[in-house]
Image (tube, rainbow, N blue to C red; front, side, top):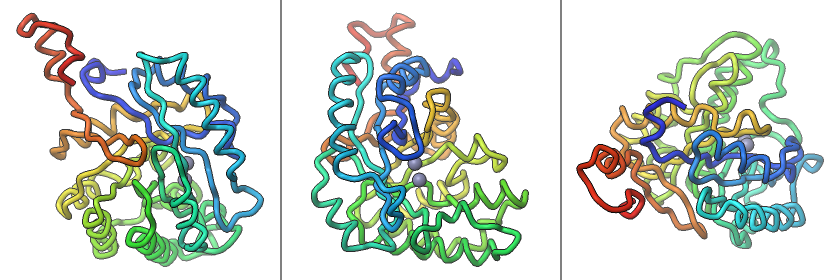
Length: 294
Ligand SMILES: [Zn+2]
Ligand SMILES: [Zn+2]
């Protein structure tokens, strides 16, 4: 972690545990890794993947995950807060079922993500030598806009998700300026409903080498009235937990953000990013426990 990281509130709000089809890490392993990376708060966001019957998690998985989160959370009390989340995928394809999931969800936090534009087919798995990436991205944003205005999510997940696979396969990075109108509509819907978006750092670990969404779009989100924002690594293994979080938070700071949002029982709670009180306390200009004022 950078020196600066010690003075920031660090949270990782997108992590998959072994209750997701594509991860094997236990909640205890995640918690340990998060602590080592300086995180103060994390959310376990296992998949509930609609329109993908082979992959989807279900109520049983979420229930088991919740149990494990409570047990591990008790062991890490005072050191790390662990929230119960879910990544609800593909509400664009199964809107009724998605709304039902949101209504019945008893955890803390819901990421609404689009992975598929058609049932059973993740856009990451297309062969981009055969698919018009620019058109696909346009359609993808239409699907995101659809859930942005209708689903009861807390944040929209990785809204530029296809960029990762497109760049991985072709080396091409699509120019986001072409899609500004679509992004503006998404951000206005998000901000108008008091919802949020996430900065997903997984793109930094791929050939793309960028945040999802990147700086220019985060700036646009802010200018559209966007307030709530979370940061998440989308880790599926312990070495990726907390990865890129400092970088994402630093980017938000340079764009004028002073708070990151965390969630408890679906309620957004803004947390100051910079802990000026701790800085003052350590240099002797403040008294008392630095934690008291946060
Ligand atoms: Zn996802
Ligand atoms: Zn994910």
